[in-house]
Length: 326
Ligand SMILES: Cc1cc2nc3c(=O)[nH]c(=O)nc-3n(C[C@H](O)[C@H](O)[C@H](O)COP(=O)(O)OP(=O)(O)OC[C@H]3O[C@@H](n4cnc5c(N)ncnc54)[C@H](O)[C@@H]3O)c2cc1C
Image (tube, rainbow, N blue to C red; front, top):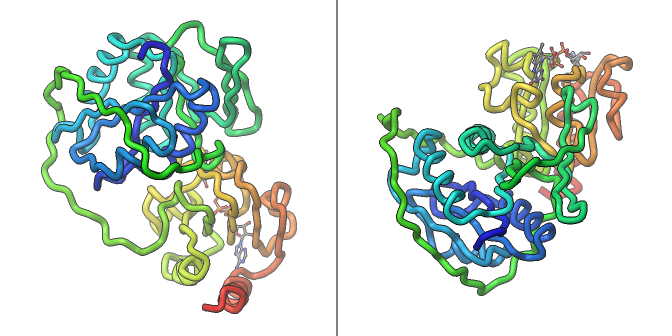
């Protein structure tokens, strides 16, 4: 429907939307008064996944199910969604901040000549105009911005917006529009699934443990992983640790890595450089463990322990085990 708020679905590639979509759809519903539609480009959708989108508040799902949509390739997705936008004139197009959606939203905005609020952390309606808040200067300042014309395109930072309450037993109206799918410039050669660690994904986790240069080497991350298993956390890293080759880049938190906003962030041997803070400063509770009492991370930490992480981590893990009776 014209003037609806569209939410582009990030999924798990197994037929279900990721839980961050509850936040994106919830916020779109709050702003639009419930006029929310989901747009799902996928190679596999499931009835459960469609039900989930409806349960979160999507009144309609534009379902584009085709092998060409996975893996994501910008040159395939962008013209398809741009065509749909031109036909149906949504008022807004929202997506969660993920590696894929960061790129996609920018491409879509460029294609449509529309404005983009990337990495939004706040949204409000001022009369009939949307105003977004987003961090600038690596999170040092928050800027308010608005759009000269519709569609209002925005990516929303995970774990910031209130998720919609899931309502069971809902089925959306599903529309399968006929679209022209362009050829991909990139072809999929092989897909290898990463062996699951059993730990949550970094940007989805409610608790994140981060290890910096103070970890001293890749072999020591096992103590953080042990703690993560006990409290159900994801394990991330600073750029210094990533640059040293101790952790893959997808675990990097910060300006040139992932942006996280968990309920609890625990930093071990991380100094708190501004570029690291840019990726985690909106965490609800920040705990820092560092042997240097003057480490900048203590300036933003809610709780701090000045001490040697190699003593503190095992001691905390034991306490967590006792508290959680594991
Ligand atoms: C353009 C640009 C982009 C960048 N992007 C990012 C980014 O996305 N993410 C990011 O993280 N950084 C980024 N950086 C790098 C950033 O400036 C810092 O260099 C980096 O964050 C430092 O990582 P660190 O805190 O692990 O290391 P350090 O700054 O070296 O800090 C290590 C800390 O560990 C403590 N320590 C040492 N041993 C122990 C111990 N046994 N117990 C307890 N504490 C101990 C030390 O006291 C120290 O405070 C970027 C830099 C630039 C210029």
